[in-house]
Image (cartoon, rainbow, N blue to C red; front, side, top):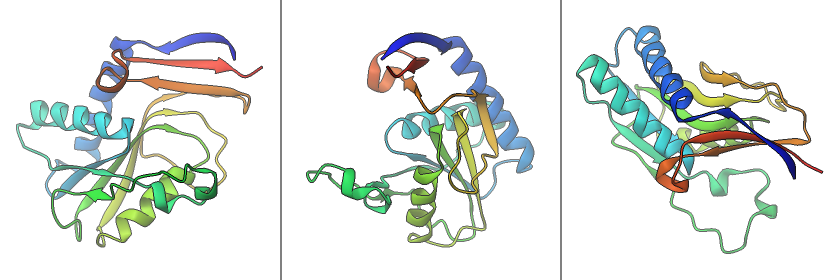
Amino acid sequence: MINKSVIMDEAAIRRALTRIAHEIIERNKGVEDCIVVGIKTRGIYLAQRLVERIELIENVKVPVGQLDITFYRDDLQHKSEDAVLHGAQLPGDITGKTVILVDDVLYTGRTVRAALDALIDNGRPRMIQLAVLVDRGHRELPIRPDFVGKNVPTSRSEIVDVKLAEVDGMDMVTIRQLI
């Protein structure tokens, strides 16, 4: 892989998450009956950051949960045989709630499809909304995000890497070209 370039630095990520938090509040006319759920791994940390921003803006504690979609994926045969299922760690019943699903990068839509299946297995939300830090295009499924930090048109030969301080020690989004 070559040609690594930074498309979002720490400040850009912070601004994007603050804007998404405001958009979530505006679209839902507040955050009553909302639950924010991050998709493992980096979506979990982005969800926690969004909840912190929403709490600062609205002065309301928003429940946050996490979702491991490993065994809901349609490409499981390509995953490690040692994969460990952590399942859903939700802050309560999602039935009748607005669930804001959070992920780092939206690409084909298959991760989101798996997350939708996992959520539905845990209840029947009133509505599910999708927030992503980066939308890179190339959808294979009819999935569209409600909230986007940055649209990054890419080719299929490029890779978008999201690094977050909680996992990687720094906040940065880069794009690399496959050789």
